[in-house]
Length: 243
Ligand code: ADP
Image (cartoon, rainbow, N blue to C red; front, side, top):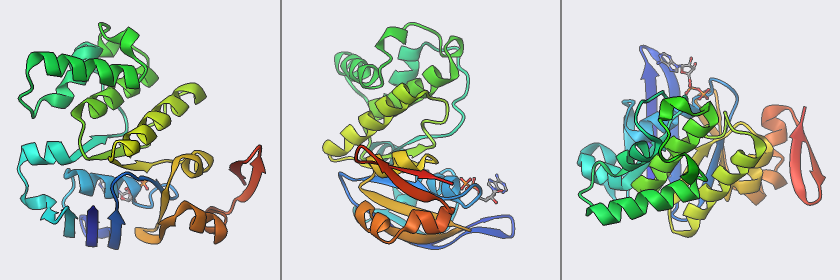
């Protein structure tokens, strides 16, 4: 269980996250939604440890500020926005996910194989990460996260460069991690996809959490319609939102 208590976050004097209190359970997919600049990425960056904050973030009773780098690598992985270029091969990049661990070579290789397969990029393994498309590079970083095999997977707009097929592949693979007991926390702009894959929904608006609850409650209370000014419609049991 990951618990965020009284979280505040500032850039200079400007407060961009205010009194956030959230709990994330094991085995669940959390969609974090909100308009641009509402504070979603900042929340992810606080949890991943790259942005300082006030308040506490506690995982299984341990404050994340007090754990070692290795424990952090076991606990949290993060797929950030804007995957950067690299001259390493896709396979080498993927293996970096295990750099905090002392795996035997055979175990590491098998973890890399599995992660590449789950991310659908086994065929790219020997290509250099700077010589693949933006979408393929995003999947490469996703594979690195899968390979790390942390308890909590943070995804910040993971599908922004992906076509519909690869978007579905990535989100399905992330959802599959929940079946293995992992917690997935995914910032996502596509509201329909958010509802399709999420167990729970978190809505951030103006640096505050304005809703956190089960997907069914979110739909019953028309939370998305009220917060995004959209209308809901259903096609073949799938829910869509449009302005
Ligand atoms: P979102 O992910 O919801 O689009 P962000 O968390 O990126 O929002 O940003 C929240 C607010 O913090 C925005 O007003 C943004 O301009 C500001 N912000 C984000 N990053 C920085 C930064 N490095 N320095 C100063 N302000 C920032």
